[in-house]
Image 1 (cartoon, rainbow, N blue to C red):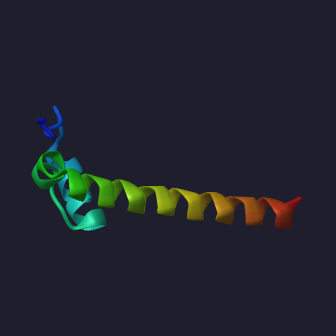
Image 2 (image 1 turned 180 degrees about the horizontal axis):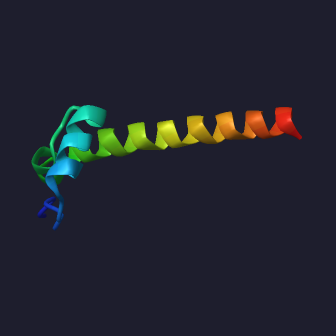
Image 3 (image 1 turned 30 degrees about the horizontal axis):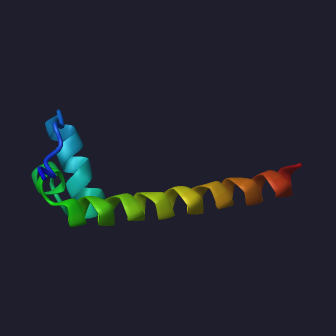
Length: 61
């Protein structure tokens, strides 16, 4: 089974990936385990941000 994704990315996207997750798109593209780790962190960050927004909404309204 081929785990490689067909990704198109810019140098700015590469820089952001390195800064945010410590891996480049090539490694993300080639290693399924790395992709899963990155996506798990993204999901956790998303959930955390939604909780912060919900907390702020409760305090404002």
